[in-house]
Length: 427
Image (tube, rainbow, N blue to C red):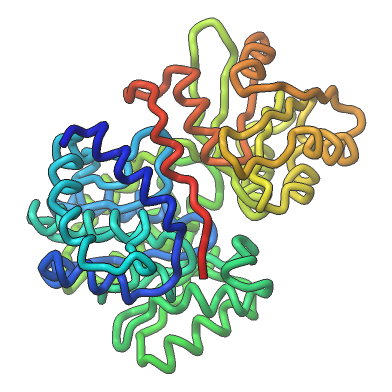
């Protein structure tokens, strides 16, 4: 099997949607030899900030000399981004080998209970991390937590970054219901760390921790002023990243007896963290600065607006906006359009894209003074803004991956692997 064959096979698994529940993942992991039993995990859930918090944790532990696996989703450009060891993506040949080895196991499932793409990739990740002798795996949930395929592990610590409205169709319409799903990753006796602040969500997380006798640790904005964060200038922009860093720091300190980290390694990890597509400023020859931010929901849009005010005060950028239909795109336009001098609404390369015409109407309503226009593609929007001194591209991580390819700021050759991020949930 070639890497291209493996990707095509994985793409075919999208036909099975995104089923919620642990039964099939548990069965597949058992058929694969229970690789999760040979690994230690930090399990990370939350509405926003999961990936950045995982990046902070990975960097800190890697600088402490730990062999660290990192499992995240979605990927921006290449599928191999999802599985990394010491920040090195899984080699293409390993993807081909692992897919070929897992295929026979899938024959043990009836047609109406065939494992989904995410279930297969989750077990594939467990097998690879175990084979490669990872000493710790930073393990990000896909969607929710309680019934997410990643929830078959018992971690050293469970982390919930925050709770905001998102994926309400699947997780519930209220914050307490969403918090209930996220808090499903908490395990009996396993420490729980959260940066959540909304009272109704925090109450659910705290009550779940109490019921499961999980030592509970709450991180607040005040913790961003504690050493060493009080004196460090983080590579990731935005005040929200300081809170994500504080959540990671609290987790490291809770686990100090299990996985020791020196103060020097802690500082080095914080200062060396990388996480693409999140308030990432890129300089491209022949054009002005571009800020790429996967602000993919209303909470992310609010954070982007605050970060622009913090780091680029007085600057009114050109805004290239593409959003998914299943997000609160009207509210997102209301948050972002007022900061822009010029707005270009584009489709996301996804069957779930919001109509650019709808975005244009919402943006014009929020900022009638801005010049706003439709663009048939992101490529054209980037051409239209080439002479702008500062352009912000935002609204979807899918859009950010495409922008990275078009701007040539990724080492990965252009692929169609972004399509693997598509999913249609089945209950």
